[in-house]
Length: 108
Image 1 (tube, rainbow, N blue to C red):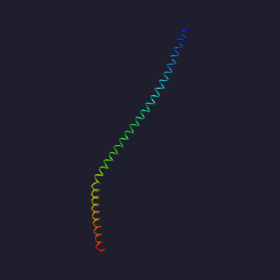
Image 2: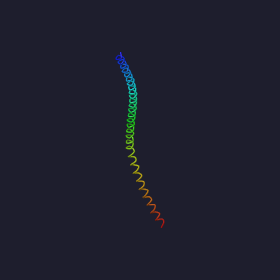
Image 3: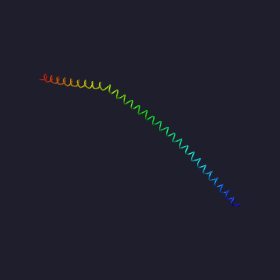
Image 4: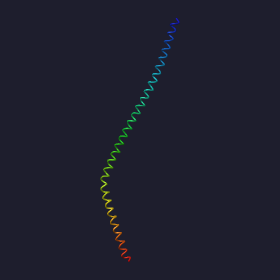
């Protein structure tokens, strides 16, 4: 009967729509899984880079502490040497003045 044929056609159409929908959902699911994998990989890269950044920061902090420690050791030596240099410059200036005075005396 025409009504039965119509219902059968509707059932076929509905079934076809369901198959298309399932295929579409499978495709979406596949894309979602791919996106999740990419997100996971990005997350791992980010965590790895963050860890490297923290390691570098720690290394720089450690180096800064070492520089500070060495400067504390060197500063007194540098200060002592600067004083010695100033003393030597003063003595040199005095000697130059004595030499100039002697030259004036001998030059007369």
